[in-house]
Image (cartoon, rainbow, N blue to C red):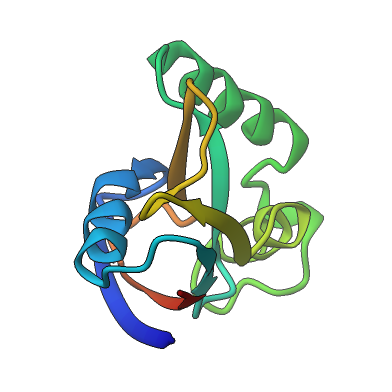
Length: 138
């Protein structure tokens, strides 16, 4: 069995957005017990992460780390077509990922106790992001 959909995530600017509930809800509707879920983000200035969902300080610390690692300093980059955060957003996306594969068991994504699925917006302005979900299973 194959199933595919696309979800839209509206961001409010730079930061991590938990999409676990929306993803798990769609998976449950498909009636698949065992399988593999692939998530693919159709953008070059945002990414997907599996990260801790219990302590919000983890998300803040991640953002603070990336701010030090990839600063919004126009003097550091040639590409600035869409502003000072444009090239840093591309670098952040290159250091993370735009695709995740998650196994399914008993009709649900197999995640650890403290794991959630996040869209990581790397731009400072709000955006509409599209994630393709593709499910293979039985």
